[in-house]
Length: 447
Image 1 (spheres, rainbow, N blue to C red):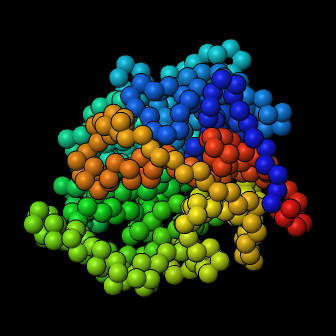
Image 2: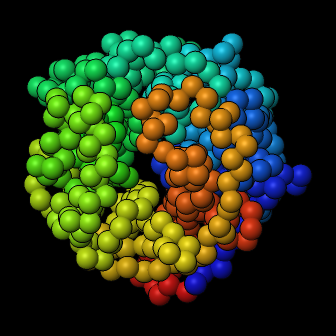
Image 3: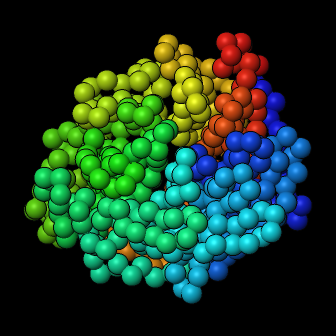
């Protein structure tokens, strides 16, 4: 196993970056924008602050440059580098979620009308979502601000936003209502819908994002949507059970999931909107799972999705057998980086595979520290969440799987493709670690 280098902010117990798809590492300097907090055994509640920090990849130095109350463990504050001398992160302003661009030298801040989820790889433009709606519907949002769209299942005035990083102004690119109605789909408009997981294509010409909605039987349906960076050309590439993804190149997307089966399609049946029928279905779910076992209807894989939609092609089937957090090596796109969730003994694996001839190279195996979540603050952590969501999670399950008390690797590439970094708690605290993979991706042997 390669040696791991750790980073720490003096005076703070835990350091982390969050999700694997942010632009949180500066290409020129390899500095990283990360968060530091004092606890890891409970979800954040309204008003909890995280220190916004700059970590130097090479020296290991970590310095606080700001503070935010808009964060969670799985996705951080969606912090990014903007150019070479500024960073962006999300904050609350006057009771609403917003974003800021902060110059690192002067500390000057530009307020953004909307919080950011992703930024364009080549232009001073960001893309945002309604994080109050995300929290309310169980999609990795922030607790503490009210969702102004709570009365609308599929709002016309909310969805995917473009944010000018210079002026701070925002405009709606794709509304949630348009995604429900403009693509010829027959979707239940009385069920709550939301967008999440925006990822620009490598050149920035297109945007990919997930459209999710709660089903009458208490489950979630997901659609993989793509549009041009200006919001035009909206189309659906896949639907069913869909999870983590990345662009293979400017046209093809790789996503973990499985295409919709007849069973999956039946979960939208109008009869399931009646409480009595839903209750019977809920009671029968354990039996259905046992009957299906490991049938094709329940098995996922990394699917390759070209512009025309899923055509049955998978990536590394039989080698990559479980969901992870995938990303392709910057610039060359010739290596896949991913990880696994903890197994029964809490071991997680960090892996690389060449794209053209897939073979698994294990970079690290680390054992997650089991954490007993504090339940005394779960009421505060779930404040404002929809009753539909709360019925689907037991408090302990919510704390671990949705608020991120468990610590996924969320592996990310350094922009030069020579090294990667991860979040991990294998030493008893949540920390950021980096490891070189240069010899491996150049054709050497993993150390």
